[in-house]
Amino acid sequence: VLPKTDRVAAARLAESLRKAIEASSVESDDDEELHITASIGVAAHDGTFFRNVDQLVKAADQAVYAAKKSGRNCVPSCTPRPKTQSAA
Image (cartoon, rainbow, N blue to C red; front, side):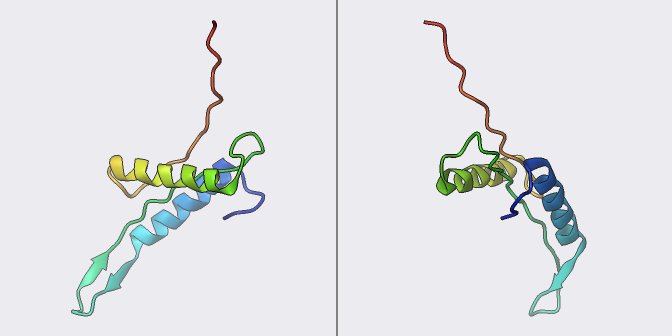
């Protein structure tokens, strides 16, 4: 949660964090060096979409699932689009 941060700035910060995680390693109990990666979903509330917190969290969660589908180790953003009204 990043108050007063738009989607673009949040994605930049998440990408920096993802790169830092990817560049580091951890040691297992068996003294084996393990390399880890992370996928971070980004969604932002700009006052236009997401009527409640649950919708915002769901959007970020959907972005994480998009990362898993695209090969992981990335930072996708949820960019809501207004519903288009069809001509009747």
